[in-house]
Image (tube, rainbow, N blue to C red; front, top):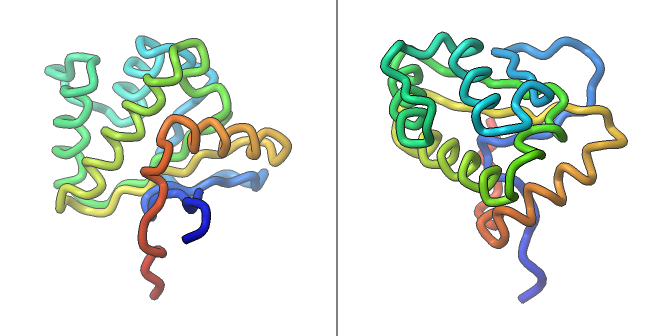
Length: 142
C-alpha cells in the first residue's frame, strides 16, 4: 500500500477563487480563537439563543439547522481559522463538522476559501490535525 491519501472528506473543499461564493460566509479572520469562532458562527448561521458557544452545543445547533435544508458554509480567510488556538481545536472543529455531515441530516458542505498562495499551508494544517482521517473512499459523482 502507498501513503495515506490527503484528499479531504466529501463535505470539505478548498477554494482560491476570487469571486463571491454561494453560501453562508464565516470570516476566518474573526474566528482566530474559539470564542471568536463561536460568536462568528452564532451570527452567521443565526444559531438559537440556547447555543452555548461550545463544541457540543455547536453540533446540536448545526444538526438542527441542517434539518431545515442543505447548508454551505464558506470560510473566508480560512488560513486564519483558529490560528491563535492549539492545533487540536481545529481538529475538534473539523471532527464536529464531519460528525454532523455524516449524521443523516441534509447536506453540509464546508468550503475553506483563501488566497491561492495560502491554500497549500492551509491544506497541510488540516491534514496535520486530521492525520489519517482524511483517507476515505472517493467522493460520489453525479
